Each structure stands twice: as structure tokens, then as C-alpha cells.
Length: 200
Image 1 (tube, one colour):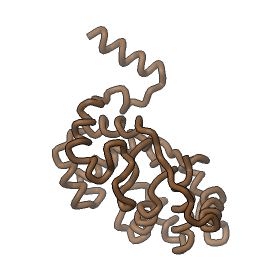
Image 2 (cartoon, helix red, strand yellow):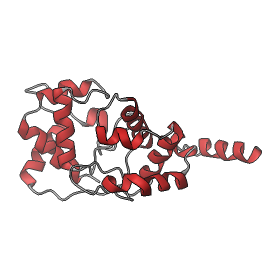
Image 3 (tube, one colour):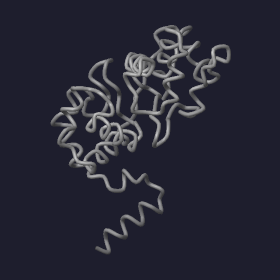
Image 4 (tube, one colour):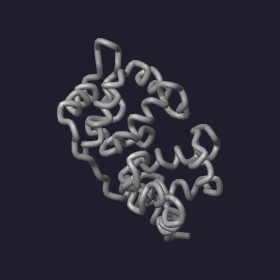
């Protein structure tokens, strides 16, 4: 009992995230090896451009998304089946497991397009009222425990999520994204997604 209290106190003193403090990484690895790796890879690198990279993603954010998939707040038939039997503790452990993995990034396929994306990311579009991405996701795109890390994410996945925010198909997250996505042009969606995928 004293050892457990000491470990928790040490984790708190070192400033470790709550999700990492209580994580059972061995159990998380078993779950990933049994189901998650099919789409997301064992290291969270993603098996296809359609699936999100989870490596380096914020642990609390992953746990919350898994909970939303389970409750139905975030719609996905595939993910609903994958998370159906997961406990809240296992979701936290999965978040901590993937957060520890080294994040990867993509090379810009079109430097000019990525340049437009950088402008949107840093300054937004004052002419159409699009807010700068950095205002919520940070100057490096690493997000917060509540907001996702966007740096290094698959560009096609980002495009699809922005479109889903625009159509309200995705409505489990911050409603601010609905108004932002609605103001983005097709070019801006592709540009900011391309740029974000190159960030480390």
C-alpha cells in the first residue's frame, strides 16, 4: 500500500499526466496487438492514409475519444465494435501507450500548398473569419490534453475530419470546429492538412 502511494506521489511530483500514472502499458500492448494494430499499427504509425496516426497523440485525448466511440457520441461502426468491451482504465492505458510512441511526419508533396497551409495555421484567414490553428493547438501543433495533437497527422485523415466537422457528422468535440470548418475552402482544407502533416 505504501509503495503504491509512494509511486503515485512521485508521479505527481514529476508532473506526469494522470493517464500515464495509472496506465497498465502491458495490458495496452495486448489490446493493440489484438485489434488496434490492424489499422493504427503497433507503433501508432497508421496502416493507411485513411487512419489517424496515434503515436505521440495526447493520452487524455485518446482516452476521451475512445469513450466517445463507445457511448456513440462519436460515430464509427468500426470503432464502436473495437471499443465495446474496453473499460475506462484500459482506454487510459491505451492513451498512455500511444503517447509514449515516437511521432512521425510526412514530407510535403507540394511546397506551395503547404505554404498556404502554414499561413492558415499561423494566421488563419482574416478575410473569411477563420481563426488561426495555433490559438488552440499551439505553435507546434502538439495540442493539449483536451485538444488533439495535429503535428505529423495523416493529411487525408485531417481533410476528412475537417469535412466531417463542416457537415456536423462529427460533433463530439469542441463546437468551435464546426464554425471554423464551415469557413474553410477546399483549397484551405487541403493546404492546412498538408502543412500539419509535415510538423514534428
